Length: 265
Image (cartoon, rainbow, N blue to C red; front, side, top):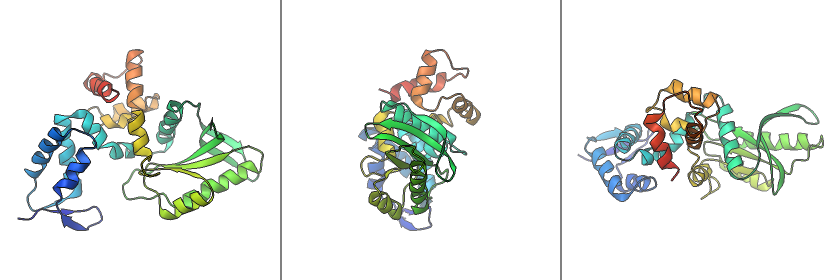
């Protein structure tokens, strides 16, 4: 019987072994990838939905390569930073700090017309900038032209009150629409999102800096523990290791500590 996959949007396509293998090779080695695929194919009979494939692959990876499992479910872990957007703001501030700059979060500044609460403010070689964060906790939601226009109008209003911003950027944990990209290019405004810019999107930055979110450990530790960690400023896996070394952790994370250390190698 032919194996077919039902996508999230209802489309049906043939099961593609090579597509899954390519995805796995981004987060684990060929030997483990082959074993995970064998585990998966042993569970597929006829029609299967893409969510089941994802969950089966993730389960097999946690058993065979926990570090690979964290990398494989990165997009999902980013979706769990909510439900509010504050944790995503703090997460992006970590990225700015790792880049060598000093970010400020949730700053209130007066524009010509209104007072703006800016998610992340920092200065780099280009001058003072702010990041407008757009967080979504569901798959399939694009950040679009409306958000790009909103960010640019904030920049204009703030600078008409002499705030001296050299630029702004729209940052999202999901993909961005073509219209948003076209507008940003035209207005020389930055966008950092999932798989954008090509080859240097948010997921690439996270991997390069090894700034995996602490939500990567949901399932190994309780959801309430993850929320408590984030409320105490432990947002990334690096924060977990640092807090452990400094003796600041009130929660027993012995089950995930070694995974955290291995992720940072």
